[in-house]
Image (cartoon, rainbow, N blue to C red; front, side):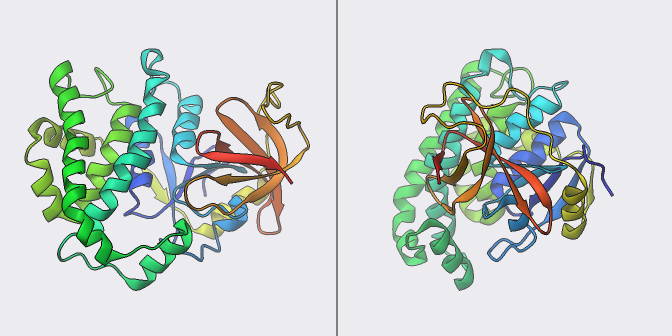
Length: 312
């Protein structure tokens, strides 16, 4: 049984966003606990922790629950600063890369992978993703779009190739792997693991990038223990919340104040609102306290970019 300070990752093995966090543990050499969650709804052992947020992954440390990889990776750097993911010189640039990786490049990867010849897309998976995104998840349409999207995918890959060629470094972050490498690597890992023939055809034109992908993969995931979901819920139940020092940002643009009942939701997909009492905010993060019979009181943290908060 992990203690209250052990990071617990709620994820599933084929999740490309989770791979960012698994590799972050590898870079930092942090021992962690792994809870496998379903790829599709329902997620009965995750929702009590998050209050309705069901995207993957989620990081749990005691009764603190962190949503979205941009915030999860920032929090890992805060708690384990000995091997930083973000250097001061890249403090602003590295998070910008996540918006490119998670949105523009990822949306290009989806039709390239799921529209590839021979890819078997389960009907229940398509239905789940339609509910999650609020728009059709049509494999036939993706197959028609795939040739055009492969053109775009190659262009995205060429940016990584140009950066590696221009710096002459093994890593996009400089002399050692870091946050930029994790963000940029995600879509290559996704394509390689989801449909290898499509990946092999696309990566052939970028040999520096292909070698870099192999270096990133060689980092590994550090050491971890498998943990039952019930044990993770029990740990949250037994660990009192520890509010972040600093309180609520006095410059909150909407005038939100500590103790306000608010709801938070993603602005792209998985827009289910999560409600609770505002306990912390700054320019990059907002956190609410909420309760559930299965876990007691927890604090759920979200990034500001990509999420909206409002009084309820």
